[in-house]
Image 1: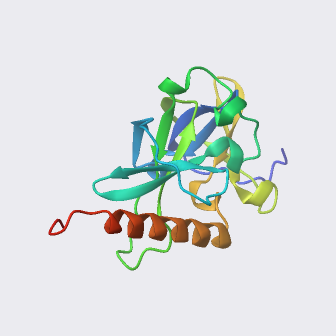
Image 2 (image 1 turned 180 degrees about the horizontal axis):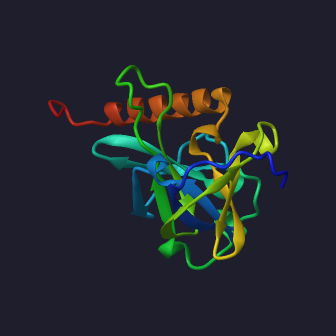
Length: 182
């Protein structure tokens, strides 16, 4: 790496396994680590959307992080590593501005969330990774680990399509709600 590559101050990151690779994500970009629940399929959703589940009465779309990053995943839509029963979901935070929601609530399927560490990432210049999803590299136990940026995973168009899927799912749930229940 060039010596003029900026180094960010130390930050707390979550390490995870995805399709046989170790990746990192800023800890503040993950609201919660969840076990994999039973997912309801979403008709007409692209293959990247595994399904949805409800959290506090709100639908959460589950996306395969391996697919977002162009990494291989196993047969029948299962991630490449280990038993799917033990995979984790990384619940992304709700929008902080309190205004109208621009994107649905999302969770990312990973093979395993493994550790939380502090490290000094080396930032990548813009345009150096696919869709700028990788913001830099972090040295962990002598190896370079890509630092994935959750906010850069989806384009504006992809986020708008996912918001439409969420709205349809919410409308369908409302149509099946018992009279008088709110």
